[in-house]
Image (cartoon, rainbow, N blue to C red; front, side, top):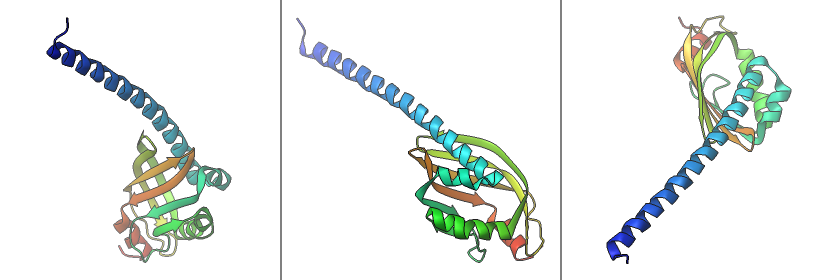
Length: 168
């Protein structure tokens, strides 16, 4: 016959295996989800970098948000909410303001619906003609139902601001 301590030990062991099993299944699901997130985010990054606006449009949710940190006196810095605002306002401001002269994506990873890319770049501010020099960038991307919902861009905004304002 089982005594109370044996019963508790067996029940605890069974509960442990069920939690471990559920957790392992959850990790497998999360890995598959992370892989899809990274694939979607990479496609978006390449579409943006190559100027493929049709692909970019197809990969954005309608309520997409593009957020750039930095000097608010620069026309493309800030929150750009909605696919139409991004295409009609943000992208023309960015394109008119900055010409990317070098680009590398050095790291990428995903966890669930979030992906992160990091690299280096340099650019020339079109109005001043000043070079930013090489600087680091990172972007955090949220993917929802196979489309990009949020794009949160981080860069050396001091270098970009100095070039934009024509400072050495």
